[in-house]
Image 1: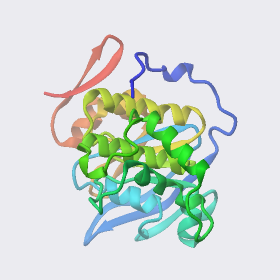
Image 2 (image 1 turned 90 degrees about the vertical axis):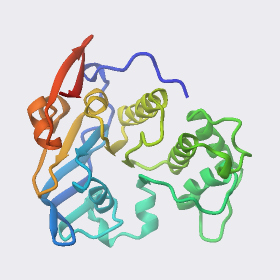
Image 3 (image 1 turned 30 degrees about the vertical axis):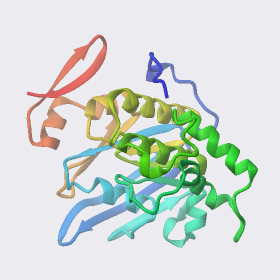
Length: 274
């Protein structure tokens, strides 16, 4: 899984037919954790052809927001619309055909082969009681190659490192082939090389017309790969805008409760604590 040496500048990204179409939308969404209001009255569209990064401190509601947007939990107030329909009215299979989720942490279940774990991503596409076929296996193997795990198909998942498990989970998500990719800290367990490679991969999917929503801890990566960002302050407040407009040293200092400065590194924006 080699990271391309050159990132495509946002200004030169080609326009994909259907881009800018709203695929997923939050309407007056409020999200609570116990008695705390983490997100209040969030209204935001997520469009085809863009990558939106969600940033915030630990406990600010990033994961709960992803779970709410993907229909895994109900909102305390407001609605989520998928293709214009309330997501709460859709079946889990209907959602899974359109929305794929990469969780923050992967449960260690019974050991299977890596190929079997990736084939799970094909299940939404299978009729009831049908096993995966040759086409499904071909797709799963192709996705393993895409994440640099060709040759791992017969390995037991119990023998994988944390980073290899993460990439296998991404391969399963790619095999699912959703329109909307919902990623909870996709760079978890990955070394710097594979962090960049994974984000380049999802940047490419967004450029090809998919919708990508990802929580990230590193504002420098958000500035490099995201079209728009959503900042969650953990007290109900939120702020959304383009990566250029919303990612500023002042905004990030307020977000993380520590002084952040911006550095120009050969034309790239880099944010560091000071």
